[in-house]
Length: 425
Image 1 (cartoon, helix red, strand yellow):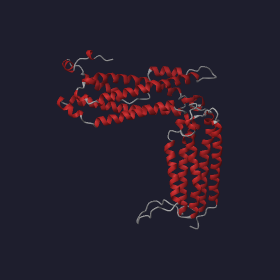
Image 2 (tube, helix red, strand yellow):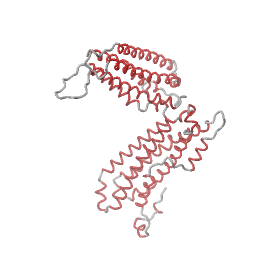
Image 3 (cartoon, one colour):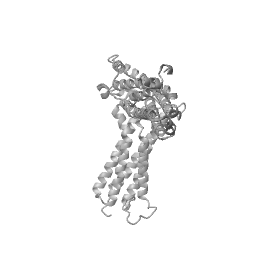
Image 4 (cartoon, one colour):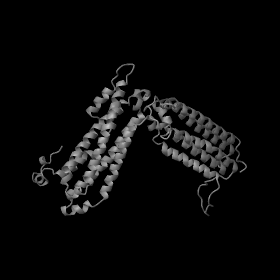
């Protein structure tokens, strides 16, 4: 706790050629403005990293590493990150208050104290992230990472990026704004301080950055606490929205337009003209909807609403397969729609159109079934059964039924493609 009685007044400081309290505040923001440099490793981080990599035995060389790093992450999300969020909000409230311009000295002690606490908290977080990243970044863990449990690279890499960019950047912006604010206070005549204090621009900027920092901190906490499936699904919502858009696009393409095109309208055609391609588009709707249904079933409203163990036995490549599957499916659906329009316009001959549509649907089937296999092997066994209701059996039967319908929709579409002919258009 800083004692105001031990600090000289601004007049005394000026006469003694010592820094004023405003000078101390300005200087206190400097280390917070600097970005976090990943290569900076403190002695504490080195110590933790060395301990994390000690081999307990030949049979279980990573036991100590996993336990130690898991404890560090627990401290990070349960103590340090919430503390960091509180300190950021305390600092911002001290800078936003209207009394700051009228009587800067009233809040200086709180600002100086919060600066010191904020820097101390960041200095505790940095070596933890460094130690965890080093502990999971060895060549052995990159080649064989089944054993890393909740410390797999998909989580740790995102943690490092989210702290360095997501959290430290708004902290830097808040500190820069605070530093400039106190420089302005020092330069502004006392009789104009009240006028400048009514300016809301800097308050709005601070509020935006504080909100951004708080969101990123909460997101980082959830990143640490969440399950592996949560990480896999982070970007799925937007991809599902894109698949919805493709469904609407296909439906619009096979229906009559609701309005006549205006003269001189040269927009890309939004509906199909010829009966064979319209029929293909109609037959594509079930497989597109079933593709979406598969991923929707895995989200929070489906299988992932049930809390289960936070990690699976999958390796990094397998996790990547499930994570990226929905994006690849969306790309295949986009290609499918493009192929239909090209065939309808006569831009591709019959043989090419058939080949491209078959290849596209085979690729779509492969992407979805690869994800399905990994879900059945690794995620479904983690779902806890509810008393009186066999949850795993329910989902297993659901996926079997879904897979049957999905394969039927693919086959029906491909049979129609094999007889497709656009030479008569």
